[in-house]
Image (cartoon, rainbow, N blue to C red; front, side, top):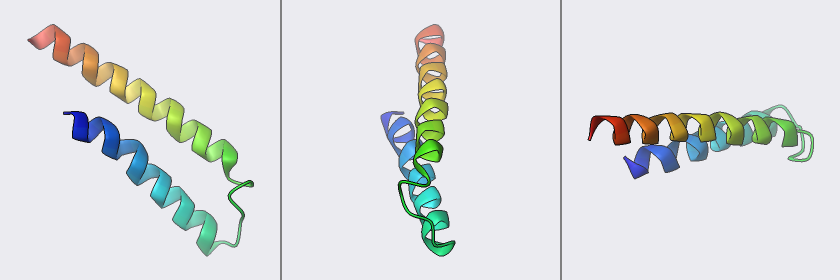
Length: 56
């Protein structure tokens, strides 16, 4: 389960970085997107952790 929690933000960040690169944006231009990815991934991780604790 830890792999899922780590892979979600990693994969999303790589996809976002690829999008920025293809469209000739800098990483500084896409900083807000990385923040959104971090927040969404944190919410998903908290949900998965809560569900794991509830079911075990």
